[in-house]
Image 1 (spheres, rainbow, N blue to C red):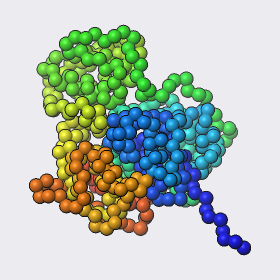
Image 2 (spheres, one colour; image 1 turned 180 degrees about the horizontal axis):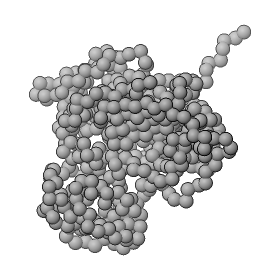
Image 3 (cartoon, one colour; image 1 turned 30 degrees about the vertical axis):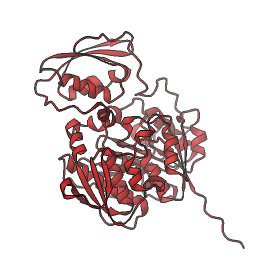
Image 4 (tube, rainbow, N blue to C red; image 1 turned 135 degrees about the vertical axis):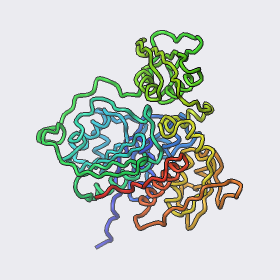
Length: 465
């Protein structure tokens, strides 16, 4: 009898090459034994860089799926295509396990429906503001996403308008990769839903059961009708008439979330307390900017529909503290961090001014350093206390960081004049590369909270079982 044939690699379909998809793909390829197909129709934008860890400024404008696959090398394949009702069966049917790293309701519904119908295990992962969420759906469902949330008829808020903290989506992505391996192996125990509050230091793991009346995985053939509406946060449509050019008036019809809100806030806060500004918004900003200004304490005086857009009058709050505005390029790059109430422009400036000396080894050092650089920490020194892990795709870590950092990145200890904050990472355990990458993400989260003056807070780690 000849030698046994080698085991076939695990075929993973990863839908979404963004803030969750990037770390999930990095972890899967680094752990080995998987072939990852990344499906994403979008191109890299400047505001992606602080949390979508595979991209650099030079990648702006290129297809995410293609760039991510290039960065990861062997074991990854990128397809710049949107998953929908027309192609879902083809892509999901070719996979052993699926990871949902999207933020669109329609795509999530079709992923869930088709994976249950075809008997493919599916991991739903999400991150918003300071919270990461994870649901593992076993082959055939029972329970599935629709058991918990029904049909996702309405688009909820996304990181584009509500913001997100970089380590949140990194933790969600690395956990999704771990869960994909567990589901493919038939492990994982009872069905569960995880919630990790990284800003509050809390973790919850809830056992969940099937809904007998679920439209997707209960008795009878699952069926969903196609959505008539397009995804939220599509390219903004222009207002029906041109925005007037006058004092205290600003045309934001072509700005994307959340930069439209940040620019509106800057314009209001440049006025004297009580003064009024007029904003012209496209379809995307019309749905997010008025509520965002109210959350910041400003008064919205009127909202008048103008075609697909909105004419908005707002009065500057009298007790809003003014902050020195960031340069336009930095505002665009870090917009989805800055829109978080716990960060803002003042917090982002603290990160840009910060200097950090990281002591560690292995993949934990790699992921912590990548996340700190992506968040905008102004200076990083890496002290290896053992072999350092490589960057994504086996890249030289220092070269990978240098292409993405806004400040300096150097090996060895920081000079005394830098007054760097010293951080020691925990020793590597026995969980392999994915566990180390996840540990590095948690460490980066603790460092960033401390730099923002929000720590120390307990590390939520893994939810209790």
